Image (cartoon, rainbow, N blue to C red; front, side, top):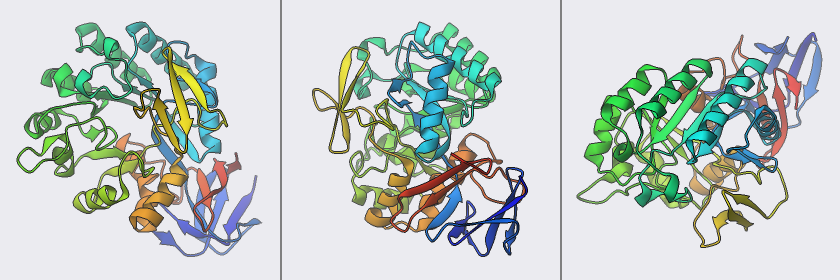
Length: 372
């Protein structure tokens, strides 16, 4: 392909803005400097590492569930690429064991097929606390059994990355430790636990929290709850920054309290990348209206969000520095799943990139230096 130089935009390398053109060769970042080879003038805006979304429940009209196969994962990853997420973790919310087995099998097939953008899987449930079920089906929530743990360990051995969201009420500290030792990203969520219980789970190996503030015990003056435990920890935490799931003022306070480890997720559903107004999830209607996805009773059911829009909310509504907002969509989620080869634009890194306009709208996406 020869050398291609991207000019005319500020370049964010995953940590800071850099001067000069970004030179790409054979699908990887070659250097920063004077333009060489074919020149692509971006005409302003920001060129950043491809965004990574670790919580994607569906896209392009399909949901991750009991009917998931290789084709479904290919569709989800392809649509996410067009929305700015050059890599993602397709996410199964609470479902039957049979559905979980099928999704794991599809994930292994996607790994072998090297599906572009497929980074692994996120199993959000079923080992949660029904008191904080959110849009999850209460009748399918249950404690973790030995065969559940065995399936997770088998999946972790075959997938490039595996995140599992659990509530301390539904798993033992030993199970958390076993998963963590196998390389699973154990994330705490959908829980009513106290801060003390959350800290015990973190000490056992949980190092992440799922959609901070949502579906978890809140921070009080005498009981810090799960939120307080997360804000006071050194671990990671996903955040839905649509301005709906968490108020911008709350976001500002939380990001001031926890300076590192917070990353963006879309928590998007099957309607992502479509103009549809509703779909069915496990027999229940999910409605899309004015930027919200809800069950018929008004319960939030995932988000109608893309990562570029989340960055816009953080910068324009919350007042976060652009460097931090961009890192929350790129280098920080890469660190969560141990992918140092992603989330950065530095010599030798894959040329997975997004171009954002001055208004933070998505203008272009590249995987391996090839336009999506």
